[in-house]
Length: 266
Image (tube, rainbow, N blue to C red):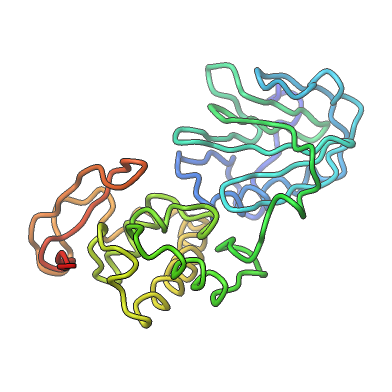
């Protein structure tokens, strides 16, 4: 049992065991990457779970590094590089387990990492060929002008879709999407071609800025207190009733205020 193995292992600088809610957008993965620093360079003592990534070869190998790109959590154990995608309901626990089988559990002398309800796959190509950090909202290599060009290149797409396109805004999820569109008072089913140059610039800028606010708020366990529209029933600005419905290519639930985010005519 992990409690006997490391009974006093705690979340760095918090005095609490870490248990993340199911909000695995890009900023959450950056938090995870920092939380598992105590395991980097440590030897895997046991590996289990239903992920088919050759777990039998992991014991005795070291966790070399962990990186993030958008919603992909990347790890290297020995010579194996794999990605974890938390999908819609994925989550993780450090040094505690849920009452169900994990996708992946890695046990070390100083603790363990548990991933649940996640897609885990081996990467056969170098990550430099697979990932473009210019579009990662949490990366230091984020390139706003480049992202603007990607947005402008898709004039017929709805902004509710392009914000969730991981090839354009890697790391943006449904919460960030809803909050950004409300902050900018943009109707979710507006097409890119209906936006002005300034509005496109603002959309890109705010997706990046809000992602970093999300990160800071979640680290302090106050993220939900700052939601202005996501899972709300009444507009915080006009006090009108919000509309929540499935929109866009992925039919993700989207919240909007008909008064503050009016539809635009083509």
